[in-house]
Image (cartoon, rainbow, N blue to C red; front, side, top):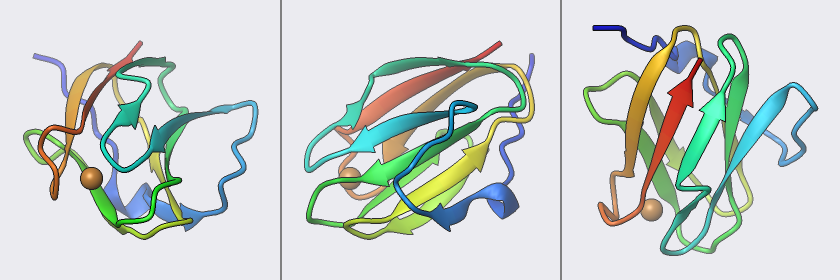
Length: 102
Ligand SMILES: [Cu+2]
């Protein structure tokens, strides 16, 4: 089974701006968007919190954990392998998304 290694060390607080080389997951009050995101190996995904409450995006199995993302913050996670990551908000388990790294 392939594993994605998206290092927690590579998850950094960042501005909302995303370069052409990055992808963005928009975090709002009750959803992660898009629900399905295809990402090229080595690229980064920014989890950007546009909502008011804080959120924590984490991959099932513990591959990454953004820690607390406060309103107006973004956390960058670099995707270092191929495979599928199913992610959930630690505070609101109904918030989910899937990242497929190729
Ligand atoms: Cu949440």
